[in-house]
Length: 396
Image 1 (cartoon, one colour):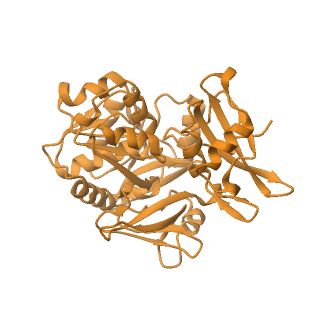
Image 2 (cartoon, one colour):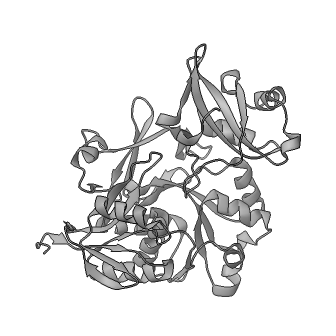
Image 3 (cartoon, helix red, strand yellow):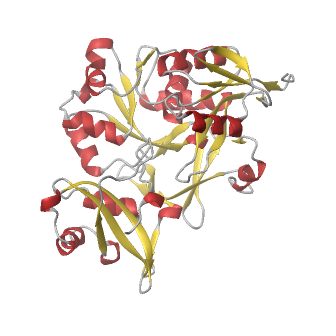
């Protein structure tokens, strides 16, 4: 039984609309939730339950206690499963104070209030979906919860159902633009999960839509930096090596039942190590904005030069013959690492040669960043949020 300073943790294994109702009920009762993917294989679900050790499981058969379950500390609102860009899952303990902080901060930055319904077409077992419920809860806005991402339903939601705000990953926005959807009907399109390609952002801007790029992670209740500016109550800083450090209420309490991993995630003065490398830019109006360069572990050092694979991907994605691209570094006797582009061709019979692609990249990138090898693949492995899973890119 939970003690006075503890609370139950219910693992929710339901389709999205039912899961949303269960999350709301748990928060109303002061309890914590861990939403799991209802489409995951049974073995994967059982493995996560072993890692998270919830006190209860709620599925189609109802809510029942779990043998060996461990309560959470009082004040925990959610445990989100994350593996980041690795394959090892962890449970991120997010607090009720953080829920309130992201709700107040994001709503203020977006100009969102009770009169602006959210559309939720993202999975609730990821922080981006759960954060929609949190933001709406704080300001009292209704949430329209879709079973999944249906292009036509998302396109028509403002006109047909009154949706004012929607949170998307860049791939979703690209599909909407490709379909000619009236994305400008939304008050705000909040993008996160992966860097937004410049070409996609430009296309969206050209429609007159208000697009806001969100930076954050599971460990921060999702997006806490909007268009480079931290929301109220959040501090960002850069370590000497450029790693982005974060402090504030939205930051996780820690990794569930993993004290060593928790300790390693924070600096001595209590700042979260994000694992991302960034810099600050100052706009003409004097605003200082955080710009994320790449994951620290993903930076390629080729010939002594730091290369951001995301930057290279953004350039190559502009080539008309390339449908998708991922970039990674592979060991090289001469360069230390060489930049390799893994590309999905729009037409396999019309893919440019390595020399042609290098010439295209060289018009926009310095010499060390130009790919030295191109590998044609059927698809680019990506996380559900759209991040390139570089560990799965391998040279044949």
